[in-house]
Image 1 (cartoon, rainbow, N blue to C red):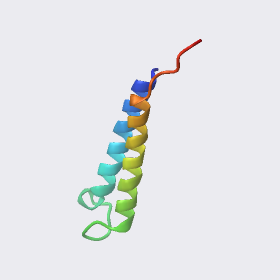
Image 2 (tube, rainbow, N blue to C red; image 1 turned 30 degrees about the vertical axis):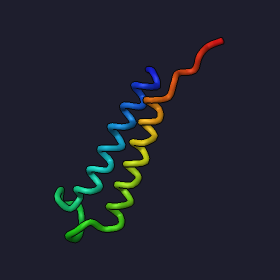
Image 3 (cartoon, rainbow, N blue to C red; image 1 turned 135 degrees about the vertical axis):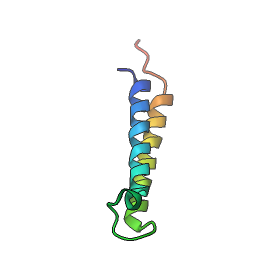
Image 4 (spheres, rainbow, N blue to C red; image 1 turned 90 degrees about the vertical axis):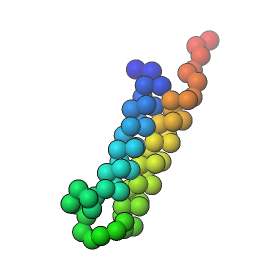
Length: 65
């Protein structure tokens, strides 16, 4: 599997983590209205994971000498 494919998968995982974290109250898992600090933390982690995926997807593959 290429670095680009792995990067794209990691991007999707990060976006899903962020979206799920922000929608916990709508899904019914959250315990109070509004966005709490745990949801923001989960969204931030999702964004960091997605950014790592972007870095992987855009990095050049190692060249064999």
